[in-house]
Image (spheres, rainbow, N blue to C red):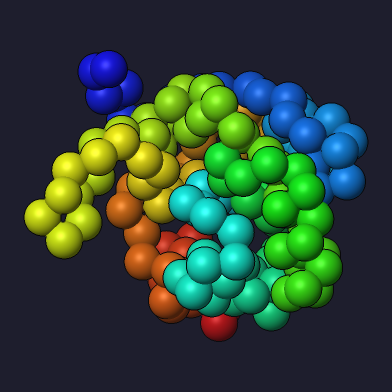
Amino acid sequence: MSQQERLGVGAQAPDFTLQNQDGREVSLSELRQQGRVIVYFYPAASTPGCTKEACDFRDSLSSLKADGFVVVGLSPDPVAKLRSFADKEGLPFELLSDEDHSVAEAYAAWGEKKNYGRTYEGLIRSTFVVEPDGSLSLAQYNVRATGHVAKLRRDLGLAS
């Protein structure tokens, strides 16, 4: 499979409708009606890095909401695993199941990865900010789980 071209600032965010941790369908167009949407892709629920990143978003959620942002996390995990992750970590935002990774592919967040000398296809930890009109105001690939939200806030010009 060829690597999808990465999205950049000003590009239209691919719309999607996926099931959340409760099995309810959630669409990007619906989320955009609530404000600017932070869409973050993470490889696997309940792993150390993904837990750290999700808890970082959880702990920053009230200030992000105050700044007009909605947060949504996407992973290739099934709905039941997302429910368990949300419950265990007290995650108060939508976690969406992209089991066939079609949305990750549309965002070029699925592709070749290297780990310990091994090359394989997988989810590339990435974050996007989608404006209410559907355009991207931020597109970051290969983000670090630790300290990501603080960096994101700096990149968006928000107070920490």
